[in-house]
Length: 199
Image (tube, rainbow, N blue to C red):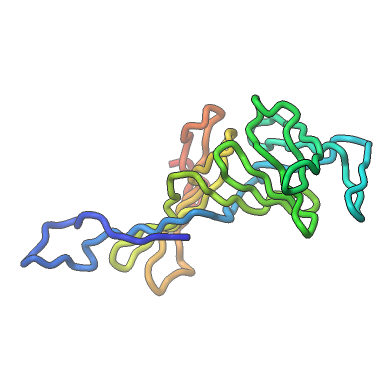
């Protein structure tokens, strides 16, 4: 899902008209599959005990490992809800609401902000569907130039800009990409150009 609009002109309006080259366009998105340096989460088996559900065998407990923050949570299988899956052992202190088991035995994790994180059958992170109130800026453009943004997740599971690529129309193969690095406190630490030297 995306929306597109333009902001105020960069230069004064002449003769009552707004030139296209003097507008900044924003593209917003609700979901993204970010090019991550490291996956933010991983799902692992946390019990040697197996349970039978319909025609398949499942681990009784799974561990959701936060690869960015270093913490982890245990979730336990339940079939008492409308969708079979796993619920947190300690719901009040959990960052998540429910880990749903999907038809292809993949997983869909819902966090406390109602965002959805998709995982493969092996527990590898695939994509985050951002469903919070705010939108994510997908790109911004003016004239022949466009900046596209890529996202990662911080320790709290919130989206943050991981990279920004500057492209000129007709020269997409010459894009200049900056990478954003963050400190342990979550604040921006430095910006790296293509040569890797700190700006």
